[in-house]
Image 1 (spheres, rainbow, N blue to C red):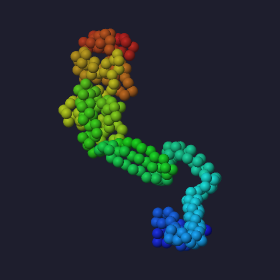
Image 2 (tube, rainbow, N blue to C red; image 1 turned 120 degrees about the horizontal axis):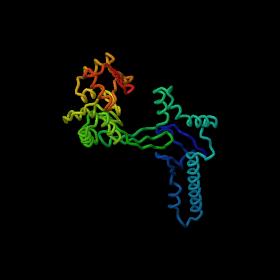
Image 3 (tube, one colour; image 1 turned 30 degrees about the vertical axis):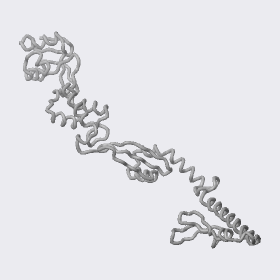
Image 4 (cartoon, rainbow, N blue to C red; image 1 turned 135 degrees about the vertical axis):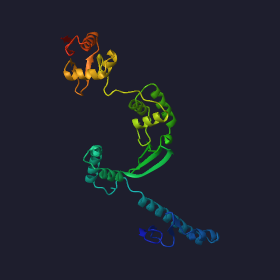
Length: 299
């Protein structure tokens, strides 16, 4: 008895070389011709010789069927020690390459098309189901049969399309009323898990500004440079002494006031009684020049 492949109209079925007795059905299962069983059932019990011969033929047919089923099962199931067609040296190279995949992926020299080709080799299929307007459940089926499930954020075209847009708007209005700047509000909302419509994981200051202006909330005025403890800027000094800002600028250009100047070009004046009194004296023409860098003044 032998097994052969037949390329017939059903798609190349596996056939058993026992004509007339065993067949393989459409689903790949063995079936046998029940002619021997019918002959045995119809035999006259009084004719024992004929019945015995028919019984022997029936048992032989059953044995033949069982052997064919075992042979077919062995053909479909590979042996444990049977090689799968991959040489050992090639298998070792594939395993070594797998250990280098993270470094290859993070390498700046790896182009985007190379990364896509690598993913196509590793991924069998991707199934995505949209669970919200800005969320989707993704199931990745890898070539080896392993799966990965995750939830990803999708871009939307408006703040109202965000899942938590009402909460975000209320939070922006509350922080704006407390005097927070737009970039500070954006940073706080990002830490709380919000995001802008076209961003996946952060809130942009422009999003905060648009929502704030829509609710007619003004932002607190922000100076160009951050404040420095123990020092006054030109504007702050003018407000403190009640003198024009232009007069201070003229004194700085003439060299009548010498003070600390930052690399950005901003002038800083010591915020103490001695420095303020010296500037008042200069204003009243009692002093011709003052040097605030060394905390002294001279006529």
